Image (tube, rainbow, N blue to C red; front, side):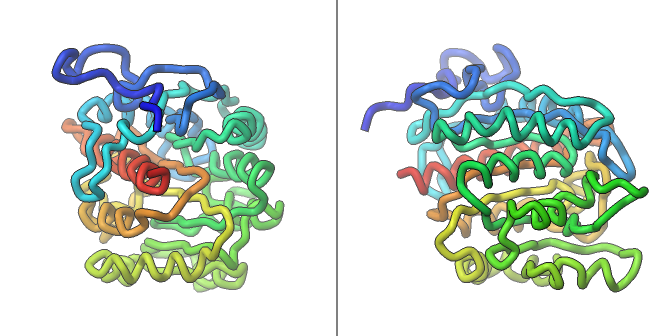
Length: 319
């Protein structure tokens, strides 16, 4: 196999804190272009939030924290950037204050990326951006299954009367035929709700739901989580979405809608690593809100680590 065309510079020659702030110090390359397996792409949109804005600065913070990353993943025994040709594709154009228009822009920008065979790793941004991603995914791959790790199911019909909001994207995606709920697993849900219907909605729509307490138990037996995903997902195309608020606020204070009693980072990483060998058509990591992060940027650091885990999953499947 030919050596990857794109990867980060040698950190023993150029220290990791030097150079432009791209994801993992990868070259900034306009996508699509030949010779690329995956691309980190920012979507700095956050005006579909319900509580605290600030995720528009999430891609920038994740990129800054990702300078700490190294290429080899010891737990999965894979040289991520030695296996994959990866670039930072920059940020997509968005329209602040207009979630529907931004959805259309995301869809239009990602379709040629997917058509070129490039797997996008999208850095958000609030969770409303996933609808645009799923429109592009479905246009290229057909309806996808969803592996969601999140404190919230995001299947409401409306919020403040708005249909395009960060709490509604997966309902819209099902209505538009972008998602196959029978092949989807939503996990990590917790916290107080407005009523019992909030808990039953996603199940009535056809999703399988794993609450946070059960998910935490699966993190200690990660093969059980893998079995649940495989049994649910079948053989069709599969997309992963990770909302940083699934982590406990002690480890991810920088997010728009924090919920107490969440996962520890080690538990989240164990769940992700359990999915090694499963091929995903795309990933996103959303709701990192730097204005609420700690001085040590712990939310951004955890987000960068999770994004690296996603690339590691792709590298294992690619290998």
